[in-house]
Image (cartoon, rainbow, N blue to C red; front, top):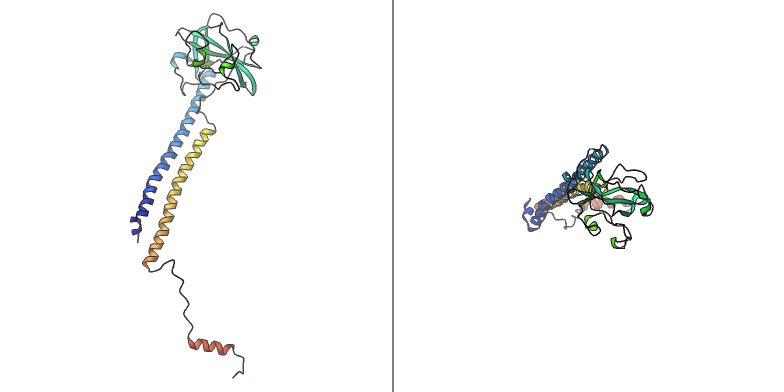
Length: 281
């Protein structure tokens, strides 16, 4: 009855199902793993923010290079600010208001300078509004960030006025200062007025944002696909089994329905006499 399973057509269907279901399950599990990784990264960011709030700092050298685990951690570095190369980073928003970052380079004993965002000020970049950086040796603490930063909208780094920077990165800073720069920067969380602290930014592809929940949605979709493939196979199998059973019984879905047998002659005569008017000859 089930010999149709050995036909080339059903061999192809079975091979497709055997391959499709594991692929769907693997892709669903992979998407679920990505979502779980985003949750872990989000929890790590919360712990890093708590460390920064509680001033539980670690030496900068122990947190480099910046990774998803160390991004946002409270870092500590000692050195002297380079007051000859103050920089402003325009078009940065804080609480929906447009302003700029105040950036200074901290010359450390390691030979590389550390970009330090001392705070944020509202309005257009104006060096006259910026408080001077501290003199002498200082110890700076702040949230560690990667050198990835959005480009200033509508302008390229070369189009910015002197003393302004569009991207906080070692590749941009090395063209402005005569020394090496760390591939990381920190944002001070305890600032002096009128500067406002810049909250740390989670690295790309981390945190519980819409992309994270898209991964969770893709997980459900892949598992649904696996169930749909199995459902369609069962439906085709049941239909083919019914056709095979009908064939064994000598039936064909294309055969016309059998006609009703003609009524006996005596029954027709009785029906005729019943319909005839009474008294008729």
